[in-house]
Image (cartoon, rainbow, N blue to C red; front, side, top):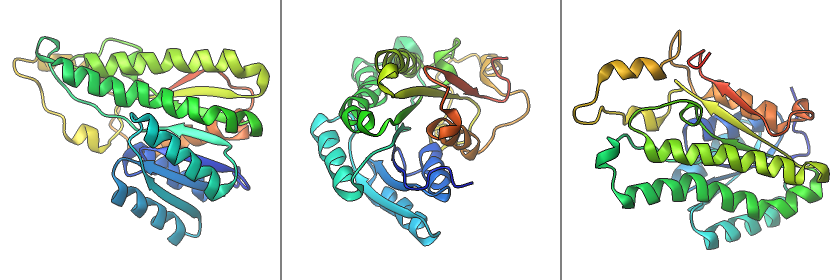
Length: 249
C-alpha cells in the first residue's frame, strides 16, 4: 500500500515499541516521518532505519511534558517537511504499584508525560493539522476501559486521553480534523518487559488483563495506528479501537 504518499506524519515515542513500529509502518507506506522521543540517540536510530529501508525519516529528541520542548520540536518538524498531515501520540510511561504505595511524585510524572504530553502535542499541532485537513491518533489503553490492577496513575492518564480525543473530534470535526484513539492490551513493548508484581499482589488478577490467545508484537497496534492516520479511516472520528486479543470482549 502507498496510503501516505506526499504526507507528513509526526510520531512520538518513536524510539521503540508501538511508536517505532508505527513510524516504520507508516514510512513503508510512503510518508515522510518526523520521529520524536525523549531518548534522542534511539529515536535518531529509528530515523536512520527508515532511511536505510528506502523511506524518509528525521529524528529529534523531545520531552513531550515540557511545553518549550514541544514548541521547539513542532517548529523543527514544520521547517523540515513544510507541513503536517497526521500526529500520532504514542509516547508514554507505565509503572506498576499498589495504589496505597503510589507516591504523589510518580502520579504527577505519569500524568505529566501520558496525558499532559499528549495534550501539549495536540494543542501545538492543531493549527498545522487544520491547515491540511489532517488527523490525530492518540495512544490510550485497555486500562482506560476496564479495571486494571496496580496502574492507578497510568489508567487515569489513559482514560483522560480518551476524553481528550473525543473532545477534539467534536470540537474540530466540522473544520476537517479527525481524532481517534487506539487501546492496546497484551502487546509486547519494553514497558511490559519491566513488569513485576507489586508486593502482596494477587496473581489471579493477571487473568483480567490477558488476551484470549497470546501476546502480540507492537506491529499489531501499529497497523491500527496506520489505518486511523490514513484516508481509509476518513469516516472514523472520535473512536477508540481495542487491539487486545479479545481481553475485553
